[in-house]
Image 1 (cartoon, rainbow, N blue to C red):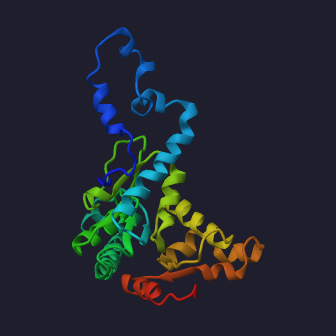
Image 2 (image 1 turned 180 degrees about the vertical axis):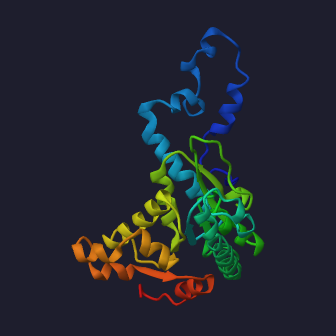
Image 3 (image 1 turned 135 degrees about the vertical axis):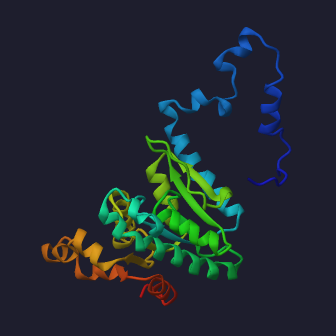
Length: 273
């Protein structure tokens, strides 16, 4: 975070936290009520403090990304279970091994976009993923191999996990609230690339599509890798025929097969067309 001097004349919180560690040990000072509120973890975890925790989770990544000068991102969604090609034979489900080429396309796409990002000193179109394995790892890996930085928006899950090793450490974030995490994905997004995945990938994709469809978000490229996969798992035409979406809504999506095609869609994007 910023080390710039404060503009006000008041004693700051850091000084008081340090002073609170030097106070005399008495029954009064040991009591939970005496703790400074913003250092009292038990207090911050209370049900009534949820609005404060939501705000903190919104502010922390926002402030750090601002301080790093990151203006825009290229967001990559995709399955955490899709293996790297060299590991496809170890996949527990054969179909996942067959999807491994998307890992390679994700890595190649992130590499290409990061090379372009570095022309703007790494401030524009920075690769952003969920920070996990599979396609997310491929995205961060491609950015790392290109010599650039990348963002990982991880989230606490019931099973043990850690961010993939290719996320830029200073841009590796951890979330409690899915809603705030998804908000951060889209706040700086200049394009969203969606690779084959499961419930989480679809949730993220449909949230972006819904926000654009309803005019709650500026239109940006929504690029889906693998037309055959997406047309098999989602009957887009049936939605049109049922009248639950309009044919124009399908124009929000671009299907591609390769990294080069995705780069061309993004670079050719002008005024929502």
